Every structure is written in structure tokens, then in C-alpha cells.
Image (cartoon, rainbow over all chains, first blue to last red; front, side, top):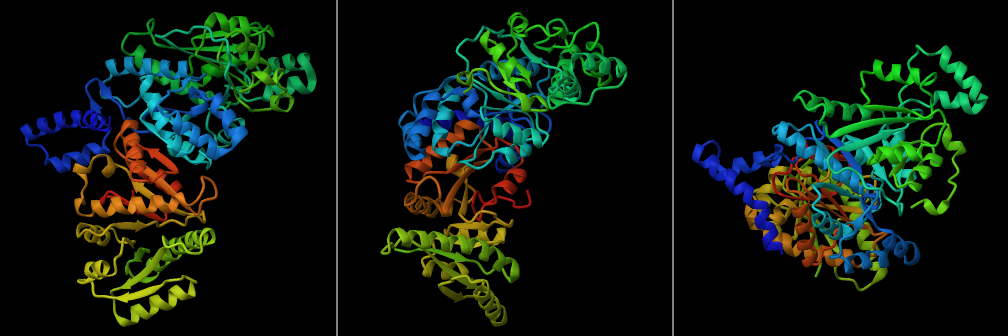
Length: 368
Length: 231
């Protein structure tokens, strides 16, 4: 198996090398060093984009794959037994986890981007960032290969905090099962959310990436929520009306929406607006008639386009999300995350803002 | 049956500073090994080699004792005889802060590594291996020391195996720079087949090494001969 793997790795290089030899451009040693550093260009586009050019999405192994069984071994029998178990089952790939459909959708977008812009490094770059021990590495790599995922970069930190590595990779979004790590990332200014495994999962599109965002404390700051929690609904409405023309402050996921917008524009530039493989949604408890206006004005002032804005005026979000079928939905309130999960939507919790003081999960079992 | 680790002469306080950091962690490994087995023979034995004038040499010696470094032996050699001195003393790993010197030595068949330049916060000895040469040996820029690298991995693996997963005074870190995740997997399997289990693994796939390296803070970097600390 090793021989075969080595051959696959070197094959494209051989082709490139012989072409260069014909052109007499480089000596083969120089060529090797150069291609080692440059973004690798294989037929069909760029596969190793530079982190500063790509939209980097870091996922932990526990959200990309299902590892509940192994988690139990770790909790009940300790780390040595856990690692022994992992090595024993090395050739058994993990099943897909809650972030899996989202990651697959990112790859679909990449395939379309490469068709239109084969030289561009403005792509999604998916990095596996886990504080797992490298003993689990082979099983994780086998699983990546089994599911045909394009994950070429990873960090297995063997127990130390992955936060520094997130910054080093210029991470645009971090998804993890560990709320503490997510909070650490948010504190460092990195968009992050906690994901949970649910039993019910509705089918999502395989050709279009759909990302849905709550408004307050996700795209926007929690300013208005503070007013609501402290002084009630009436004061909230009054405040919003008085401040209609004042922009809301930005929230932790604003940057990620911005990154999605940049990629969307690349499709529009090639006349593919109707067929764009990225679609974004705002799903907010604000109402269209009143408090929603400030949200829209803010987005417009930021130069951000959102494809659909759904103002629920306080109605439950679950049914609406079930209609939209996003690959991921970001909300700061566990109540909504759980409500979404009940109806089969993959929801991610953003532990930001004033709602966290009041966050009590209704069903502890729903947590991963 | 000692593992001999020799610290190079790369002069002045920079050399000694690197020595001090790596040396303290290295001592800790020996201590812990002996705690487990007072009759342990697989230990680090440190030899300090000085190739400069007498004055430099005595300064280096007094510096090392000032820093409380337990250097077993001092050797005085000339630059020309450096490799021979290493071979005669059965040195299995030569450490230096000078990349060119390390490269020259490894080209003559003695495994070399660079001393990490940054202050390593951890007490445990962090040894970093560059996996690219492991995966593509035909592209190894220093084929002469490949045998030495393989036997060193095996001994290091033995030593690492004396400790458990957590709380080990020795950590092995694998970094692959240019291949994708498949080739990092190959590196992991290759090292495992030599008896070396890695603690941390980072697959860069072409991303710049500098930011990651400054987080990893290895004491020793065993590499691909072209590693650039300024990266």
C-alpha cells in the first residue's frame, strides 16, 4: 500500500518535470524545490492555496466525523486505552459527523470555482484541527481518503490548545464540538461555533452551499439583545426605531459572511448569478415591519449582500429552516439551535453575547 | 549503549543558550528514565565539542557550568577534524545552531539537527522531524546520513516508549511541508514501522512554515537539510 501511495504522489511531478526538461527551464532539483513552495498546480486548478488567499475553514475531528464510541472509551477507560482502541480500528473509517455535509458542499463550490478560475487561490481551504494525539492520525487520514474528502492540511496537537494554529492558518471559521475551544477562538477574533450531533438530518443540496445566520449576536453585536433582556420588548422596539439610521455593530460571524460574499461575486462576474452555488440567508426573530429595517440597512452599509432575509417576528425558526435546508445555521441561543436540530437542521451555536448568561440547554441529551 | 548527543561549537553565547535550553530538557529525560529504571542504559550522553581557540573553549566550559548544564565530556577539535571527532566518539546526533555546519556534517554521514532558536516554554524535550525526506527518500538532499537517521528514529522511539502518552519528558513532533495528507500518513506509518510513535503531527501542504514553527518551538529540528529557521 505504501508503494502505491508513493507512486500516486510522485506521478504528477514526473509529468511536470519532463515538460520542464523539454523546455529546458529548470534543473530538476531546482524545479522540485520551487514546486515544493509554490501552490501546487495540477490539471483542473490549485489544490494547495496560500492561507492568506483562501477562505480557511478549520474543523475538529469530532464534528467532521462521528466519534461518540471512541469518546466513551476515552471517558471511561482513559487516554492509553482510547489510543489503543483507535489504532486497533485504524482501518475502519469513521462515519460522517454534523460538519460533513457542510464540508462536502464547500468542495462542490471549489470544483465550480476551479472550472471558472483555474489559476486562482481564492478557494475554500479545509483544515483538520484537532487536539487528538497523532496516534489517531492514520485512522483520520484513512477516513478522509475513504470519503474522498480534499483535506490536505491538518494539525494534530497531541493535547495542547489548537488556538494558536488557527491564527497561523489565518482561519476564517472554526467548527468544534468543544464549547471552551470555541469561546477561546471567539475571544481571539476568529469566527467559531460549536456543533452537535443529531439523529435526525434532513437532506441538503449537493450542488449549492447554503449558509444561514441569525442576526443579533451572530452577524451583528448583541447590543439590541441587551436592551431586550434588560428592559423588555417594548423598549427594544423603541430603541430600534430611535436608532434606525445608526448602524449596528458587527458580530463574530460578519467576517465569514463577507468571505462568502467575495466568492459569490466571482460567480456573478462570470454571469452565474442565478446558478450561483453559494446562497446565504438571514433568519432573525426581528420583524420586517419594524426592527428588521435596521438590520438590512446595516448589511447594506457594510456592502454585504444576503440572498434571503427571513423576518420571523418571534415565531419559531425550526419550520422555516426546514424549508430552506441550509448546510449550517449559526445562532447564539441554544434554544434555537436545539429547535433547529429537532427538525433536522444542522445548527451551530455561537457562544457570544448576553444570551450566554441565560443559556440553559433544554435537553442535555441533545448535546454531543 | 549510550545515545551520544553532541553539541556543536557554534560559538559564543548563542550556542550555549541553545545548549542550555535543550540541555535542561534533555537532562530531565535522563532523570525520568533513571527513575523508572536505575539500571537504564538508553540515556542521552552529552558531549560538547569546541573547535575554537583555547580562550573560547574555556569560556564555553565555564558558561555551561554556570548554567548548570551537566555536560559529560568536552572535546577539543579543529574544524577540519570535526567529523572525524564525531565518528570517533560514536556520536549519533550532532546539534548546531549553524545550518551550514549541520549540513556539512550530515553530508559526511553523521546525523545532524538544528537547535531551536526560540525560547521553548515546555519543559519536555521537543524533537521535531521533517517528514518530507522520509516519504520521498530519493529527494533526500543528504542521502549519506539516511542510515543514521533511521537508526536514530528507532532509538528515539525506544526511549519515547518508556513513557506513557501523557506527562512524557520527551515529545516527538512530525511536520511535512510539501505533500498532502496521504504523504503525511505514509510518514507516520514509516516511523511507526521503525518503532517511533509520534505525538503531534502537522501537515502543511505548502503553507508557510514560519508561523507554525514559531508555535511548535522544537528544541531539536531533524530535517531535510534545507530547513530555514528564518522561514
